[in-house]
Image 1 (cartoon, rainbow, N blue to C red):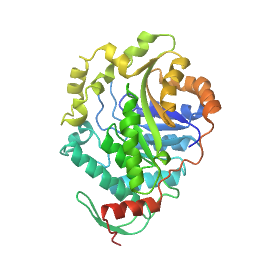
Image 2: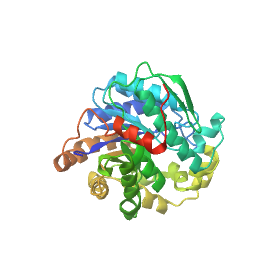
Image 3: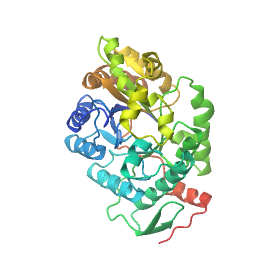
Image 4: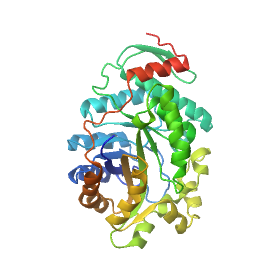
Length: 363
């Protein structure tokens, strides 16, 4: 898999819709490859937060650009977005911007689903739901009338009359072994986060990814590895770069990802107890391009080839720095990524998955 796709995350929790569109347009102007959109109903903090509907932002960015790839990091297709609606929405976006769209999915967080009236089941059920949802989305994208009876969802002679003109890559996001295996079985890419101990990837996550891929007759190396990096950036001022990350301290408390906690004020209150030292250990704090390249390289050496930065502090300055200083180095070292953006998952893989799970398609 040649080339590195490099871009930024349009953080729906941190910036207004207008500002996010400006960031996406600037990313293309600076030569970047991708914009990911964080898909939230509630933000991770309350003070100064936003709650932008990211699908609208991505579509606006698409209309104002001609090349950059757009996707979510991540959409939860389990509750407030049922799988058929997700399938229809992204099929339409791919029709508008062919070869420039991907769908990032995950098991979600309570802060997005519970406020919308849904219960919050344990992770095991959410992972089962995610598997079923991704399978349904792939069925619908084939454009044929389909009925399906699953454990959690069903389709009754459903058909997308405007299926995507090109295959839409699916990224399954996870930090765990079970999610990595699912990505190997059903996704074009495995999306994850940085960790201090790189053996977590080589000894746990990547072997699970390979196992899932082999189960449906593909190679683990054909599953793209994508990474979301959160960075605090301020040129020449490390203290300001670090301070910009303070609102995100609640995300460093793993309990908020699993429990039925959904009030941004409550998350912020507990996040305020997290030390700045821990912020520096978990997030990237940068003031210049060399720090970013050094941080990136350790993940690129592991095989990550699709990377986006969620930027606190000075996002426009960071985008310019990526385009003028980091991207030229990556192009020289790793080459140009292929276009249009298409995944490796095929109808044969889906058929093998159905055989593995004992699923018979109804028409």
